[in-house]
Amino acid sequence: MAKKILIYREKKRQKLEKKYHLIRRSSKKEISKISSLSEKWKIHGKLQSPPRNSAPTHLHRRCFSTGRPRANYRDFGLSGHILREMVQACLLPGATRSSCAG
Image (tube, rainbow, N blue to C red):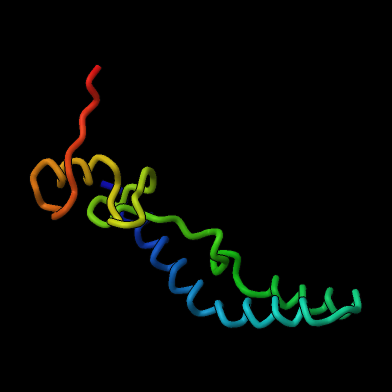
């Protein structure tokens, strides 16, 4: 189980990203339309004004049940070992078990 503060920090980043998403997108569209370099720098300054944690690259996917930050499957929102346990317990319909013969 991940520490509660890490999960809370990730939720805070998601809220910030939603809040500043339109500002970032509109600034990027303006940059692509303008040809002069000096105006592009001014708009680029606007892009740097929102908080760093509002950038989508700072987001990290976490397991829905444990909060684990690594080895997550996007389709299920679960980490690998939790996904495997749920498949073995027949809790995910349509998912089949596989094992290596070796």
